[in-house]
Image (cartoon, rainbow, N blue to C red; front, side, top):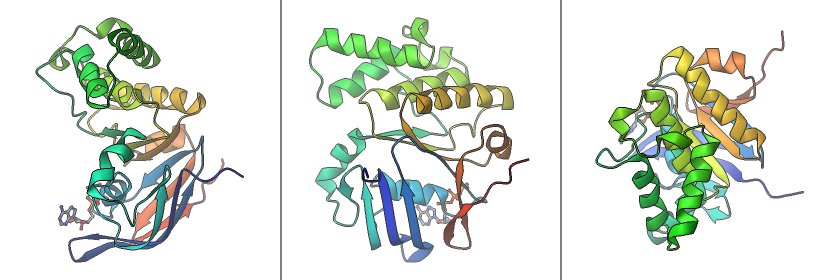
Length: 227
Ligand SMILES: Nc1ncnc2c1ncn2[C@@H]1O[C@H](COP(=O)(O)OP(=O)(O)OP(=O)(O)O)[C@@H](O)[C@H]1O
């Protein structure tokens, strides 16, 4: 069997000295779409941050896209992030440049040099999120849902093995959330693995999938009722 994309074993996650999650055992396999739910302050963001190297894993074991989180060095973090696509609630687009230049910036920063290939890749990812005609726009000229679709396109640039989306619909109205979710579903159908933290139970009901819940310092899988 293929190795899981993410595997945490007896992992404990701390913010400073305080324990946020203990004894976490989680596996995510290629092609999975997994939700991470839980009340505010239960540790969803801390969990995500540990996965993209923003919080060190202090206890237990963790392997993600072939990196060992326990022994991860500061200098390895950029390489880990290249194999991950991270999407945030507040989009985090650079406001002083167009969509194309936002995407170009990331390609350049991750070692791409051939202009033709860069432009072709930008067109490809914009097409995946149905934003091919909006490359010349500045972020402030786009709606929240459109900005999030650009952020998803940006996450796809380097063909990530795993997409980590932390409350990607948190700033969007229900209709726009569904549109962004459709994009994520489509990307998942095309083979991308996605872990998405969310508060939005309506999305969970509409698009049921494997669900992990943070509660009382633990992470456990929720069995969804089918009715
Ligand atoms: N930078 C930090 N320094 C210290 N404590 C923190 C920090 N960030 C979060 N915490 C604490 O860690 C715990 C988990 O917070 P976290 O942000 O991971 O929860 P969350 O489930 O993502 O919440 P939300 O849904 O509100 O984003 C909380 O008790 C929070 O106060």
